[in-house]
Length: 198
Image (cartoon, rainbow, N blue to C red; front, side, top):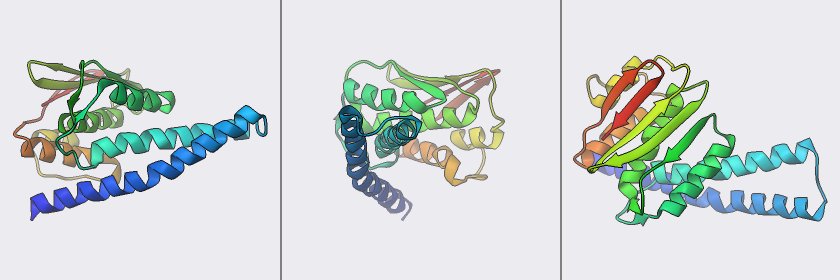
């Protein structure tokens, strides 16, 4: 039942993202055309345009992080495109080092780990994803980190899920999906740094 619920949740996430990406893309395209034609300009237009771009970027990111993974590969250009759009408005800059195409299921884990780093860095910083000898790592660094002790313990399975909110659901989802893939999540914490590996 648990596996079915997780699969159903991923399919729901995919459906929501699929249905939202087209209208958000249409809004962005319409705003771009209006800007090029000179029909609109000024801070109000910029605010609407930036918001549409940000919404589209987050939907594309969420589609990978929360949608059904499948067996397909994700090309490096597509991953970099999603992260570049996220970086335009994000307080945490997301860097991607793995070369070539990567399995979508593993990219999904990395994106969830990036979101954990975003939560840990409320004042900004960067989250860098790397892979070495089949082991993935997402390292978040910043001047100040939020205190997330219970959530970090949840990632490693050292305590039962607690304090999970809609804004921290990635801390519950990442270890479950990793376990389903035969991977174990580990966390290393230092001052101004967190390294999540799987």
